[in-house]
Image 1 (cartoon, one colour):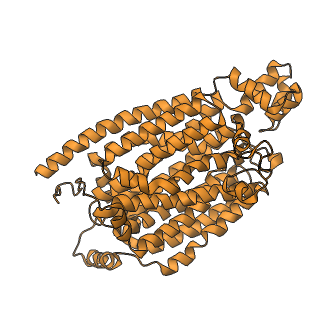
Image 2: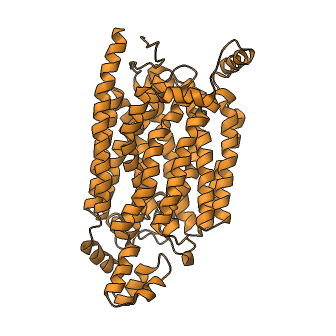
Image 3: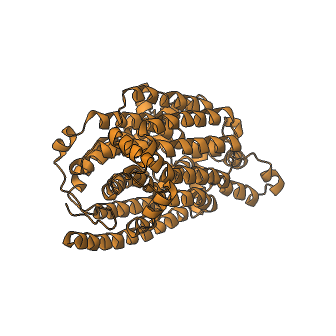
Length: 512
């Protein structure tokens, strides 16, 4: 295997083992960290999938009762902390130890969930989100660094595919827990998530850090002066300045803007504009279903008459949970950047569909298409960074993976809810409609946040679904999604150019 001694980054791509050979070559440590990631994701997505719905729900229903601009501030701060903290903590994990950082992160995350439960207001939720973000930022590099050290170059494609599949089992179960907990009361969601993540303390009892002897030996040599080691921030900065890392961050930031809008804004869009009872009627008839098992697994309301927004979005995690290893086996045959480009294009098309249609089954199709795109791009980002990282800096590079996500998600967190508020917020549109129908501006301003549409229903005497359809037809609701898709298109062009440039670099490295 040829390497570039000057840069320290190995850009060569190694032929992968077959699917079953890859799976059987994975050891118990790989499956153990998969279990820890599963538990962490159930708790995390229990809150994340419902955050927008909690924010916009009126105080009278136990929600925060804030507008989407304030919600955007919370998401932007959450995103910035969660994605930039691993840039530093990745290097700390390499030096201090993975077990120690995973333990600390679990305590921080429990504190975050409890803060959200105890303080149901803007500042309480913001503080809880910051703790949750910090805990996640500390947790990720240790888990992913363990994964890299417990796999070989020949099975990384399948390992990351399975790992991503495990993540999405958590991503599937978490929102289902939230759907049913929040129908009791919102604080139950946060208490349940704090309890769930506590199970990781049990996993840590069985955890043995791979490569620990080598890390301790290296630390001893550094202490004795036998090996010189730069300050952590200087070391990280030197790696970040490499063109292969800089360009990666720039071209993928746009995709992460697109990606996170699905989770931060689409549940709100579905709750406001999509009649999901059509799906239940298609499957079970006009009466819906009273089967408690089906209500849970499909994310239905307690009456079994409509799919809750989290249930709709759960198709994403459900598909990845059941098919990601097949997509991983398929994409292992292609260059990493090629697979990521195709994934980006599929995701863009899905976002365009969300903008163009509000029919429930079309939204289902869009989420399914987006899921295939995500499976082609998201596991590959970790595989790519893990492969090119120099020895001793695997967790640091897996921390870098979060940088383009940090740029994209932070910008999306602030601007996507704002875009939605400008073009599609049912609350704003309802307030404008009330004024245009003769209600005084003073009376409209006095309506509590989140209650304008129901006031409009009372004011007009129209049925809620009929009124929703009328407002949708009268406003350009899809424009927010078209703008988000345009950002994704710019990113796709960047990924194409980056792939061409990287191929040239690989050929030069092989020749050397």
